[in-house]
Length: 237
Image (cartoon, rainbow, N blue to C red; front, top):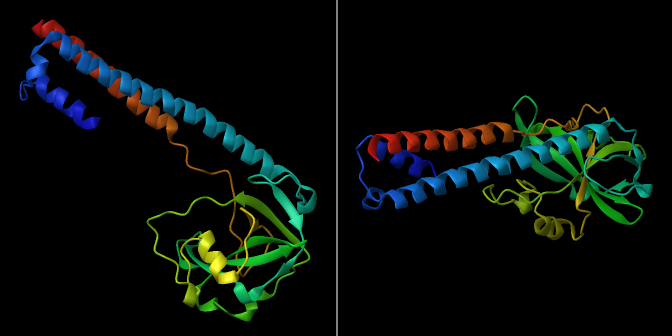
């Protein structure tokens, strides 16, 4: 799209002379096509902007609610819950990630059984040297307060998990089944207890929302092409 815009500018400046642009009708079709596409992209970004604003408001309202008992809850994204269960520390997953300061380490993801149902509990971040240290397993399983978050598809460009060394880059569900022999709920529980180690991951409504900027960009390109086209018509027709 931007290449077409670039070539249109070159043509008007006299540096490029496409054969089909010598014909007024074809030139008009060419310009109209770009303007329609750019306006469509801008409109789509406005639709996405409206969706994202509603999502952020939904998350903010959900995070303000008091935690409800997981066994009585209709599960949904960013629902604050409280529960109790049993953690299997033998199959604890160490997921590579950075902490809030940008330091590398692991997020500790523990298999959690609640009323015969299996969940993954993200208990928070630890430095590399605390891996497999019993100190990180001092945890009250009878008092779990957290936030549900539906697992999303893993980034395909991340490295493969090293299951044999328990060094993970994604929570690939097939790998998790190979490692634990169990299937888990699509909702991960992110612990929000005030623990020091592991340090629970803070879940907020601060998610990326650049759709307004993108919409302005596409609409600006459409307007600029229209102005250039009108100038060209006045100059050459």
